[in-house]
Amino acid sequence: MAARLSKASETTLRGRRTEWLAAGVFDNLLAEAIAAYDRIIGLELSDIAVDGSLQKAPCGGEGTEPSPTDRGKSGWKWSVATDRAGIPIGWVIDGAHRNDSILLEPTLQAVAARGLLADAGTLH
Image (cartoon, rainbow, N blue to C red; front, side, top):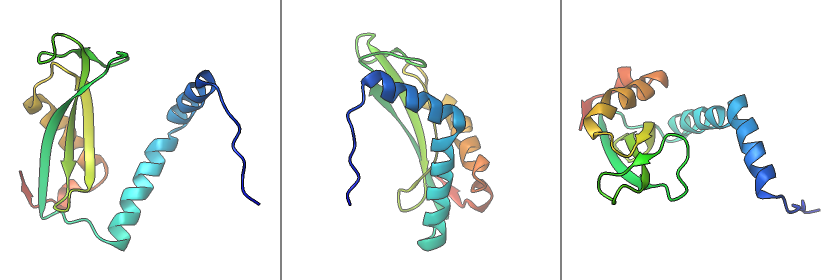
């Protein structure tokens, strides 16, 4: 018998998301996904790439700031570290005005928090 999903309001969905964030559901899911990938396929930590990107945030929100490249509209700056195959292993976000170089250390700390920085080879 197939499960049936009922419609839920946006308020209910946001409330659930907030509860799950507070309970660490997404952090645990992420840790499990990275560990499972490493067990089954294997992370390639000989080369790690770190890069940043600017993302629009049309509705604003916590952590957004005016973008220096988009007429002051709200946005985020993402900094992501990936293994050789492009698998994300650590990331941070900040306001849109943040320079990539400022986010390098927190991005590497996110990789270290997963216990992966000690095995890293070359950082690009």
